[in-house]
Amino acid sequence: MPELIFPLDEVLVLAEHAAAAPSSAPPASGEIHGPALLLAASDGIYLLSNGLPQLNAAPGEPHAYGIRAVYADDYGPDTTPANRDTMTGVSGETLTGLPIPEPLLRRLRAMATTHDLFTLTLAADHVVLGVARRHPGGTPGETAPPSGA
Image (cartoon, rainbow, N blue to C red; front, side, top):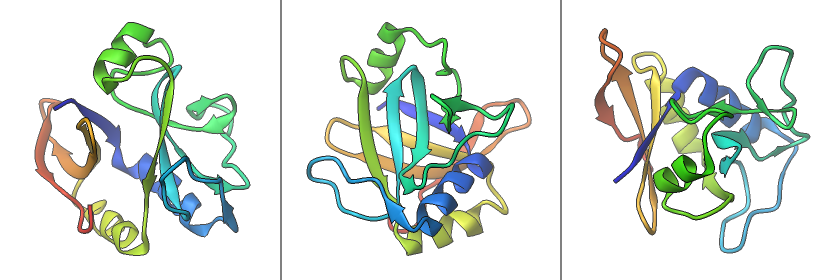
C-alpha cells in the first residue's frame, strides 16, 4: 500500500487550526462534519485544514492557492499528474476529508514530542494515519498509529 510522509509539526498546525476554527468547510459526500484534514491531490499531494476562515499562508510558507498547505515528501507542486495518480491510485484531482476528533488530536500532540513524521497509508477503501521517527539516515523509522486511527 502506498504511504505518504509529512512533517508532523506542520500537520499539527493544520489539525490545531481545524479544531479551533469557528466553523468547518462542508464535508464531501459521505463524510462526517467537524474538524478535518483535507488530503488534496491536485498540484502535488498535500494536506489542508478544513477550518473556516481558511488558514492563509504567510510569506515563505508552503501553500496551495494561498492557503497554508503541507506537501507530502517527494510530491510537491512540481509533481506530474502521472506520479500523483500513481501514488493515490486515483486518476485526476481529488479531495478527501480525514476527520480529526479530539482524542486523535490529543494523541498527535503527545506523539509530536517523540516523533517527527505523520504518515498516511492509502488503501482502496480507507486511509491509515500514523506517526513515525526519521532515522538519522533520512528514512522513515518505526511507525505507530495514533489512537483512534
